[in-house]
Length: 536
Image (cartoon, rainbow, N blue to C red; front, side):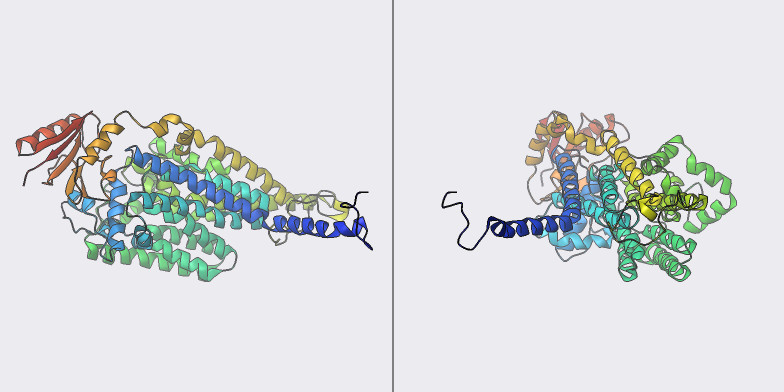
């Protein structure tokens, strides 16, 4: 044995390896303790990066829009400057002027929490990244809810299923919206109440009520769930809180901010001109309401997309009652964009339905186990018990290890299925764009759009075509270019591609011709983009 490998006097080789073995053991123990938080953190991080890339690429390639990205950008910039959340883009569009408050359009004071981010970077990119982080963080309470019923490994599959779910993908792929807060807050409300931390659940409910004027429907649905599950005091409190918020926000706060009695988005003309008339109309014709709930067929398709990814188990959970008012609000309205799966509206209920799916499969697993127990000890699983995360999850139970915990076994198979379905749906929805090279290149007209934007000076008021406005909003006051002249000194038009809110493509060229006749002069023209300026 050489001198530099032999043990010293009085020491043996075995003694020398003990510190190394101890270090390996400590490292192994650390990894075992941290494996689940690290895996969950990786899911959140990867999801946030994917959502951010999706939104930022669309912004950079002129596929974002004034309605709604610029509206929220203007409102948050107002908060960041310690002023009111004015949204001139939507205010001028309604004919209510440059000082119109975003709170009158949609009651979303929670946007104020994003204002400090604008002190770091003032622009719509900040909203897109913030939305990505908020959406991704909802995987954390979803995991914690699932782990108590299914065990840690299936809970990770559920978290992944949420992260790649199509409602979240569609939200990340379409500008910024206040719905970014809802999966996180709703999942916290559900999970914390389930964990016995009711104070935190109430705080999450209050946060939801600050997201949008109709979030009382979601909170009231949660209260109904509590009532059905025999938590009458808490359920009644949630329902009363939600109804009080709905009445106060829609009847008092929004009118004070500048909205009318029914706001700017009343979509229930078939049932009545006001909330009261609509409620009475629905009560008089419940069969008509039921038929409208499933007609046209796109509504059935949306319901299938909502419930099939959780293998229909949400239908076995009373927690699904929480989502029903939000679904009814959309399906009973007369706005076709509310009915389908292509926009962000389904993200309001995605965390709720996923948690309901977890609860539903857990209930089914317990029923199956109890039936096996009734048939005799040979097929009975272990008794129902509250287990800590990962403690014996899915192991054989019963005398001599015979019999399996059927409840956890069903949950494991379900989690695998739910994760696989979510992944197979990726190409159908917005996240599938991330693997398409053409998505990053954008359309050929992008270079011309960038030149048109560069032709507009800083600090001016500009009417911009819908998909160009987001590139200007951080340094100008952007209004939506449309059929009605707004008398802004600058106009950025597009006559080659149809753009909202024009009813027909040819009207865009007519609008440019009208501007030229009224004194505007062309400053830039290429690939259909025309920049006009009216000399002062």
